[in-house]
Each structure stands twice: as structure tokens, then as C-alpha cells.
Image (cartoon, rainbow, N blue to C red; front, top):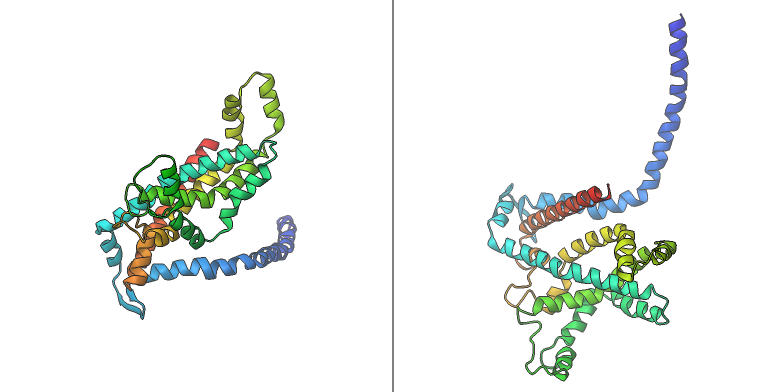
Length: 307
């Protein structure tokens, strides 16, 4: 008898909480719908559809033949895949460090109380609002070997020969890097500036009292204070550089030769120029997996440092 009373007392509150708990879950799902619907339609479904396409011979007229993993085998046996993959990572090595350093330097400058900081902020952020096609056409004209302003300035400084910025493999990657840095440095600068303004000023005042010079304050206070922003910036820039396409397509067309052909352009040519969407989907899946792997490794490393 006592046992049944105890069981009834324990069971009664449980029955009362269940509907409330269910109602909270339904409310949470309701609030997530505005995000889940576009995420499913525009992100999740294309990924599932792309994975399905990668298992087929698929042309512009649709599915033609199921080939299982044959597309993946064909890609991994093609030396061009590794060449274009290296081009993508080579651009990451050139562009990501330079744009991060430039963005940090500009943020440090405009974080000072100087009268031109609003002007500098506007001038360097303005290119970021331009589209990739506009940026590419601007630098296509600036790097023109015969009539471009860049060579004209170099001639004024004493250079005799013209530099073929977009057709010489020794300079073409630097030309694309300069154009991309100019385009994206404003966004990097604004994020670093937001991070700098979060660092308490009394830390700098205490360091000055202790006799720390400017370099010591930068190394011991500024850089640690920017660690969270730096982590996001590095991840964003690596992924952004790996997605390089518009600048290459407009400024060089992948040339000279195939020296600036990147993975994204390789996928574009395979799908839209050669009408092999199944193979292009398999290339996309492999490249997506590589980027996910990079993201996981980077977060593991940074989390370990933070810990």
C-alpha cells in the first residue's frame, strides 16, 4: 500500500511536466523554422543532390548512368586534379597572410586618435562593397602591360621593361593576390578594429607604468587580446581563398597555360564547359571534404591552445 502511494506521488509530477516539456520543444522548433527552411532548401538539399549526382554520369539532359564511385576514382587518378588543388592552396599561402597582416596594420593605425582615421577607414573599406567582376575589371586595366598605370608608375621609378602581369607565370599570382588583398582588406581591418576596441585601455596604461615599450605592449597585450578575432579571421580567409574563382576567370582565364587554374574553376569547366555534371559533382564533394577537414583540424588546434 505504502509502495503504491509513493509510486503515485512520484508519477504525478512526471505526468504534469511532460506536456509542458513537449510544448517548449515545439516552441523551440517553431522559432527555428525561419532558419531551417532556407538552410534545408539552399544548403542541405543541394549537398544531398550533389552527392547523388556524383555517383552518376550526368549531363545537361539529366541522369544517364549509375557508375557508383567511378567518378571519384577517375578524379583521383588524374594528375590535373592535384595540380589545380595545389594552385588553390598556393593562393591561400600568398593571400591569407598578406591580407591578415595588412588588415591588422590598418586597424592599428585607425585605432589611434588621428584626424584622418575616418577617411582611411572609408577608403580601405570601399572596395569591399564592390562585386568581384568590378574589382577584376579594375585590376585588369591597372595591370595592362602596355597602357596600365602600374607599369607606368614603375617606369617613372626607373624600370625599363614592361612587366606582363597577367601573362607571365612569375607575376600572375602576385597580380591576383594584390587585387584580392585590395578587395578584402577593408573587411579584415574592420573586424580587427572591433577586436582592438574590446581590449581594456587600463592594460596599456599599466604596461606603460611598468616601462613596457610599444613592441612589448603589442606582443603581450594586443596580440593575446585579438586571439579570438584572429582565429575567426584565419578560418575565414583560408576558406575564402580556397573559393577563388571570379578574379581568375576574368583576369587570366586560368592562364598562362593552366598556371592559375584553381579547383573551383576546374569544377566549373568540367560541369559547364564539358557537360559532365556528375564528374563536377564528385570534384565538388572531394573539395568540400578537404575544406571540412581543414576546418576541423584548425578548430582542434585553436581549441587546444585556448584550453
